[in-house]
Structure formats: C-alpha cells, structure tokens
Image (cartoon, rainbow, N blue to C red; front, side, top):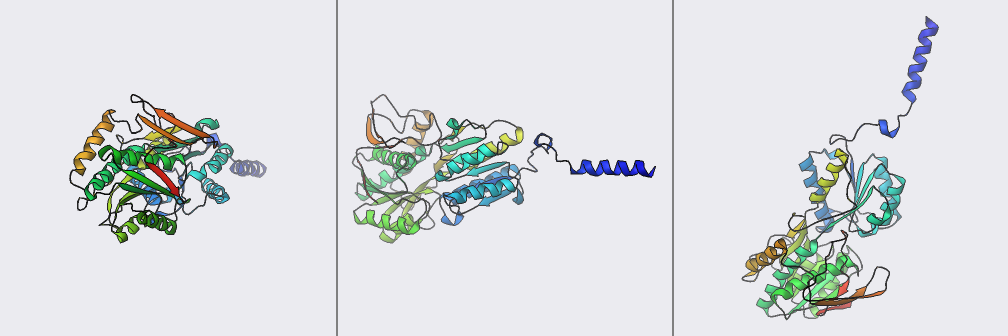
Length: 381
C-alpha cells in the first residue's frame, strides 16, 4: 500500500510540473486581458501623447478594466529601446500592444513575427497589410477632415485681421504632416481665397524649444495665424506671447493660450482601442488597416474660442462639416495640383481635374497625400 501511495504521489507531482501548451491556457476575457502601450513622449506634452492617454482612459472606463490591466511605456525613443519596451510588455503578459509613434513600426513588425499570439496595433504606419502577419495592424483616422474644419476657423480669422499669411509649425517631411498642413490650408482657402501659407519643419515630433523657435521665425516673417503638427503647446504659448493667433492639434490649447488659440483638430483614440480590445476578447480578427472619420467621432474640432473667433465662424464650420458628412465636400478635390516625393524618394506629381478627388485613407489607414500645392511654401528648418 505504501509503494502504491508513493507511486500515486509521484505521478501527481510530475503532472503538476507539466507546462500546458498555449491552446490549453486560460482564455482571454475582459477580466484578465492585459494591454500594453508604447509612447514616444508622456502626457505632460499636453498634445499627442496626452491625447492618446485620454483615449486609453476612455477605453478603460468603457470596458471596465482595472488599472493593473493596462501597462504604459512612456518616453520611448524610436530606437532599439522600442524593441526592449515591447519585449517587456510581452514578458508582462500583454495580449495586445499599441504603439503610437511612426518610428515604432519596424520594431513592432519584428516583435509581431516572433510573437504570433500577441496582437500588435500601430498608429500612423503603413506596412501591416503588406507584411503577411495576421497579428500586425495599422490604425489612424481621417484627421484631414478635422484639419480642414480648423482651417476654416483660421481662414475666417485671417479675413477679420486682414492678414492673409498663415504659418505652420510641423514635425517631419512625411505624408502625415504634409497631408495635415495641406488640408488645413485648403480649409482656410475655402473661406479666404487670398491666403498663403509658410511651413517650417522641426524634424522632431516633440521638441518644445525648437517648436517655439520655429513659431517665432514664422511670426517674424509676418504670419498672423499659426497652426501646428507637433506634440507640445510651445507654438500656442509663443503665439500668445506675440499677440498672434493659433490653431492647435491633439488637444484644446485654449487654457494655455486663451488670447491666441482659436480651436484644435483633435482625436478620440478610444474609438479604435475599444474596437481592437473587444475583437481580441471575442476572438475576432482585427483588420490590417482601420481609419475612423469625422462621422464616427474619431476626429473633430475641440471647442471654438468664442471670445476671439471671427464673427460667422460657427456657421462657416457647420456648413463645411455638413458637406464632409454628406460626401458633397471632398477635402483633396480638384482642380488641384502638387509636387512631392514618393516613399522611395523619387519625384511625384499630382493633377486632379475639377471632377476628381484624392481619396486619402481610402486604400490604407496612413496618410498618403505627399504633395506641396500652390500657395504653400516650405521655407526651411
């Protein structure tokens, strides 16, 4: 009997040491899912990462997630440190990981290939569809629709102050930025046909010092209204200090520049986060590309600063909004010409006739308008 009991106990001990295959692991539910985020800055930027973080919080509230189910990696450079951050999230048991900066994409592709049981969702990228990886995804939104509306606000103000020169502080000579400032300019031009715009790059997504310097340079050139595609509020505060006007990005910047900031083009990233997490829990595939729009609430304007906005601004914005929502107003509509660069660096041109339009985000989530149009001048860095 003792030998029998000893044998049974040995078998039980051996069974306890066997590692179950992945297919036998606990199913992913809303109660046990872990979600990772990799960000290039942190919420103190009051812009890009701040806005992403708002989306995370909205997702958490909507899905009833506990704090320990969400792991954020902030201030991660677009270098091998991204690969390290991704591996730490995988080691911590994250089932789905979101990377929010353009330069993270290659690191996420490599991690997705090595970890097929983890879903990788990358904002602003373009390589997921061609990667052949079922667990690699790109997401963005039709922010050009909100940019156009913000341009309408700027255009109305330019008429009021009788200054037709706009300025634009932007990060990189990438399609994401070029699409942004083009749609902003087209919105302004729709209400003030005489506007022109000067653009300067900072060559950084988040460099408040450089952003302030570039903003000052544009103001010194005579620009009366500045907009931006960079992470911090430095452009807004520089406009405030110089008594010129401003249109922001990612979050309302009225609180830091109450006498300058007119409105901002903003995101609600929770729309995608909720969709992607629900898909994982339901065992459903996430599309390789996903792009929300103005109609879905993925992008919009923040509140308009009624204390300084030009008379008639609300009406002009609502007219443009109705046109976008109905489909009658296409942002990149002909007649329109431009010249730029392809992804491989070769020269590219576009010429749209009066009955044609460029379907931005129609075939991929990432922006693809990469052309400088007449009336826009890139003046340096």
